[in-house]
Amino acid sequence: MASVAPDKSFCFRQIHIDAARNSTDDFNPFHEPRKCRHIRGNPYAGTIVLGFQLEFLIEHEINLHRDMHGEAEFIAQHKLNYSNYQLTFANALLPDEPFRLELKPTQVKTAPPALSNRVLIRKEKAMVMIGYKRETAEPLVLAERSFGSLPDLRQAEDRAFLPGTNYFLKRKFMSAGNAKNFAAGSLCDQAYYFDELEDRINFPDMFPVSLLSCALLEKAMNEQHDFMTNPMVYMAHNISVDRRLARTVRSNDVLNVLVEGAEIIEGERGLGKSGVNKLLFNCFGLVHGQQILYRAEVHMAPLHSILNCG
Image (tube, rainbow, N blue to C red):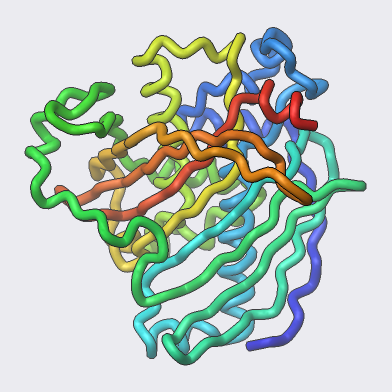
């Protein structure tokens, strides 16, 4: 299991960004070629790659690595049913910028059983993303949350706060077609997940998770946020996905995305610290009623805070 995974080189084009944003309903102006020019203080020459494109590519490359090294047997033996992603954004990636994905050897733990891989994405002269993916028996993110006491979400108003709660609801519907386009937009092989002739339907972890971007944008619109004058960017994602539940999802299934927050996290100061205050959103994807498909901590910050810090 500990053999070294080779680095791989990739490059996104604008068509990949368009496929990814359209398939996930991500209307962030940073990804739209016309609107991105009008974002106040935008330091980028054009659009930027979606964070979830990179995260899906990470998921896919680790899936291939697990297959190559027979790690699925260890996962099944120890019932490591949760995929956990801990990823930090270091720099934006632009279309037509070549980059490398570096996957470190799998680390195996036995007490408790777990698999872990460190991953890095680099472009020329800059780090883009760094973090880990871990397979565990229990979720590592927001494990204490449950939603059995929530009202019936089928009757709840879409794109609104659930009465008596701090949760904003965005209702989505799973689509194999959109997931295939998201795979293509993320430089991943869609046939690995979907093949009608072979009766293969496996929604990848990152497709339903990526729909939280739309939910965050809808929540911001509900709160009258101005995306052009006060743009926000991702700082970090901590995500746990129930893979057993993910394998049961089918097209047209309802995905209820709940967003809680934001909580202000004061930035740490000192050597190697940015000092930037972050906004923490807790996000959940519920399927088959109130079952939790994924849990995510999403750290964001105003673009101007990051630029002023730099």
